Picture 1 (spheres, rainbow over the protein chains, first blue to last red):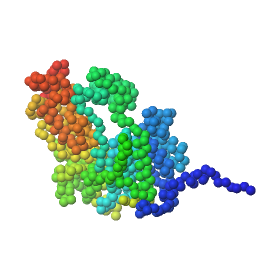
Picture 2 (tube, rainbow over the protein chains, first blue to last red):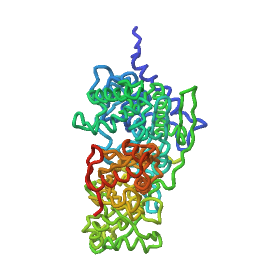
Picture 3 (cartoon, rainbow over the protein chains, first blue to last red):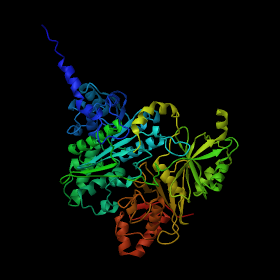
Picture 4 (tube, chains in turn yellow, orange):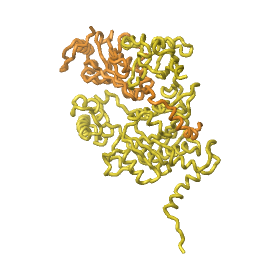
Length: 450
Length: 183
């Protein structure tokens, strides 16, 4: 008599998601209203939900590992960087033989080989290389970035993808939540951003620590710290002597070597000690030593928020988690408020209707902005982004050289200026504390469509 | 809390609605600099020059002091506003060779708000006033050109003479200065 014994691998496979099933297939007192316990939740996570992880560095490696092991099946990752020796202590998806290869590609290969339920698609590119058609495909975006510029860029991109109803409210289907993690040594933060709804990167820009800058005169004449000597070589001596005929590249060992030698000479001259090769690297590239455990904590907090947002099994965080384990552990979560004057997210485009773009001139539009009770502007300046992505100044009366150069635009029709239906203009005026967005709506078009 | 799960199911529909080839949006730095530029309130001794009126991120500021040591001079500053403005200050260099304790011969300017005291609430206008002030009250305490600072501290008459000589075009010590008198 033979007993048909089940395949042990299959048993393991079935058991594998038991933890998630307990959470996703049972009602609980803390579930959100729109949560319904069902096996669909797990399936959504494993098959339909498409996530983008930006950055495959310290946070990115942790995030990819967390999300893949959590059951997410469809991940994309973007990173423009290649692997360096100094990454290997904490970026555990990479090995010594990977040095010089793309972080995104290596990380994807590792996860794909290790976690069979997850497919990671790598993009060895800059985030700026993609447009909204790329970002549109994702349900959620998680960021493990080390740059404020990149955060501001993706923030601006997600905000620009919002669509508005006729009454000015946001079309909720156009929102792509962004979960942003950041670490600096023993300090870190994780936050949930619902573009247009909750505080965005630009609303809380002042939360980012300012870059350390030493007074130029101290650097030039009264250096006291080894950093002053390095900054001197970086800012003043490099341009003056131009040793390699190119701008300083922090990743070029020859460049760093030169800076190190000169900084050492200067330090000796002023009896300053402490200039080392590592310090030179650190100062030139603004490096703050990364701590693996901080990355792990912050990535875990971000992955948990992704899970909650994707499944509705519990309220997502509102909205800013602060973490510090420099001395004991301190953590605090609070709600960062949306800034009313935020340049990026409080800028709901205001519509201006134009009868016929071929007879309406720019001057007519400006007149409308001044006369209309809705705007009552005094002396508006107008710019726009043209179809080719170039910035264009349409008219600015307050700066003489620009006024002269743009005066001819006033008498041109909107059509002649290349403006299109739905074109957004950036308008600044003394009557408003920040720039506003005005969207042109061509009446003629509307009629044709009917 | 908004319902995001329902949102996901509507996603496909939303994608179709999404207009292809949407217009690029101006960056936050761009919005802010437009505000700064359109509200520039220049003293009569200052003027701006935008070589490309479509590019508000790169421009020149010309200062022609009407009093003090630098009266009748004309000094050009090059402003470069980066994509991280106003989190980071613009890069400002003096394009005119000048004999000045706080400006070196490479055009580096020692002005606190351009570096260690920069703050996002400051504007291009704040920098203009800061630069203008440097010409009215050169500060020998924080020198970038140490020789000039020493002269200013020890012998104001000599300093004034050196400034005039440099502005007319000529040698001060070992250094030759081009003429920068306002025509």
